[in-house]
Amino acid sequence: MGQRTIRVTIILGVFSLLSIMITQFVWVKKSISVQERNIAIQEKKDSLNLIQFSEQVHIALRNTLEQIATDISDSSDLYGAVKQISTNYYSVDINEDLHPYYLETLLKREFYTQNLKRNFQYGIYDCFTDSIVFGNLITFSEDSLYNPADEQMIGRTSETLKWKKNDGHYFTVYFPTVGADYYKIESEGLSSWWYLLFVGIFPLLFFAYSINTILKQKRLSDIKNDFINNMTHELKTPISTIGLSSEMLMKGTVSDKDDIQRYAGVIFKENKRLQNQVERVLNIAKLDKEKVELKREQVNLHELLEEAKDMFEFNQMTHGGTISLQLNAENDQIQADSVHVENVVYNLLDNAVKYCKDQPSISLVTWNDKKGIYLEVTDNGIGIKREDLKMIFDKFYRVSTGNVHDVKGFGLGLYYVKLVVEAHHGTIDVKSNFGKGTCFKIWFPFNQ
Image (tube, rainbow, N blue to C red; front, side, top):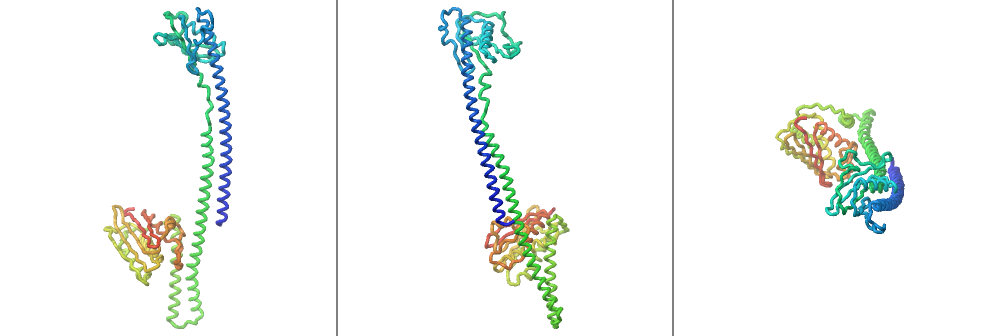
């Protein structure tokens, strides 16, 4: 997949998400607008119902008061006797002695006449002590109309109830259910916005995941192409050399024994090089499939480092350079596969030599902690950029070498190093100062 295809995919995906989000936004906003309009209509309707309810209660209580009041000559004398304390709470002033049963009977009849089919609670108060003298809760049902809330309650209203006469009372009526059934519609704006959020976030996450997967596949494809190109170059050179040397020997034009020996040596050397490259790729394939078969044995890490130092100074650093050892670990014995551990050290040293513009200066340092041994490999090479550090252990990945074009490889060395270290239950970290050098720190446990 090319860069242009990826860009087109991203652009189309962004436009698709935006269209979905805009559509959902318009729909939610319209839904909220309709909901707010319905709420406003319902509130207005409830307000009118409350006004109508209040008028009906006033009429019923006034009719009740007219029947109670026996010493009035004109109904205008009752002006102001009925007071509305709150939406569902009313107070009525009286001067006569009032029996609870009589009051309850009048209230039931007047409320039913005014179509006030609701639960109500009344109370008779003594204005001198400002305390309730009698009270009762009456519930309404279509079958039994108005009845006391509890037939067994103490003080249930009765005609035979003994009542101490005491002038100067007032009674109150309270409707507990009024107000509870109004303003039921709640705004769904918040839930609608949450819906929009959920509808939008999941496609967004899926789109981000898809783009991330595409970019990873593109990077993997580029890395594999780079690997194929490198491998072709790495294999083509020794094959060409072997072919030329074989051709010279087959023509019979070389008669000198020294020349024959030299061409034979070239063939042997290049053949060995091919074997090593193929073996490296096969080892990576085995490790990648988690088929690591470690032949654990007692390994003297210091002795292994000294051998690696001697080998590199003899074969790889003929043009100068130094490898210094600071073997500070008191215990350098680990249970490990000596071949793989040796390959780890050789890979790190090989990178330190290859990625160095000047004469390499490499430092190998060891020390112990309670559970294992640390190995630190520091060089003075070209270093690694910060954006490359997180990918240097990826398979086939090769760090750009800038002007250094003669660095060869498959991009498998550090990938192999990390697999081997983790197979030994160890850890590997890297720090680098671009242009100045790199430091790899490896830890191997004593017991695995």
